[in-house]
Length: 294
Ligand code: DGL
Image (cartoon, rainbow, N blue to C red; front, side, top):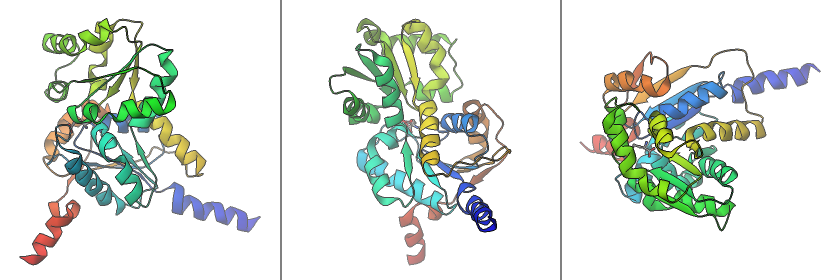
């Protein structure tokens, strides 16, 4: 009996109390952290936002995969029980590499978003919106078709949404409304039933998107679905925290912590207390060796 309770106490300290690590190209991944904190409130979270190298959404697969691996490897020092690739672009372009090269389970945002879309589609076309890189990768389409081979999927890149959100424009703004109409008019005409918000920033424009597409179109937020997927993975491995406490949030960025704190709180829906600036040699493997050579 004593041995059994000792086992659970040790396990609690060694495994379930380890943090969940989350990375993104910048501050948008905080919209995923918000969902994690809502549904897994006792979990500690360590976040890395690569604000020095954002945006990822216009970069090549090779570059995004390199950056994503570096971001995730930086987070390994915190001994996470799981890593979340909160960035849709990184999940779309680098998931295979992350899964292959990291020693802990990795959850991306594409598969959970795709799963929810298939459940809601009911035979009508599904739309996926995201960065240029996410849409041209075809990753959402592939994930949806793995679950439902005949499903029609329409991808639409919406590159102006990210800067609009970062500039603090919200759903009531006339520029946002016009941009939504410009990008989504063909999707509305195609008679979609479901739209996947395949980018960390888009949940902040959800109202404008919903208003334009009308009440019959269901909106899937990949970040929210990802929080459910994280719970499932942790539950399966018996690694879910079950304590009566509010988990901590530690944020690290590669540039401009002040801007991250200011704008990030809108994504997170809470104040960000402290943000640590990370030097390049701590997250870029080549920077560390460059320094040694000097
Ligand atoms: N976080 C990115 C994504 O979800 C958007 C910003 C970027 O382009 O890096 O795809």
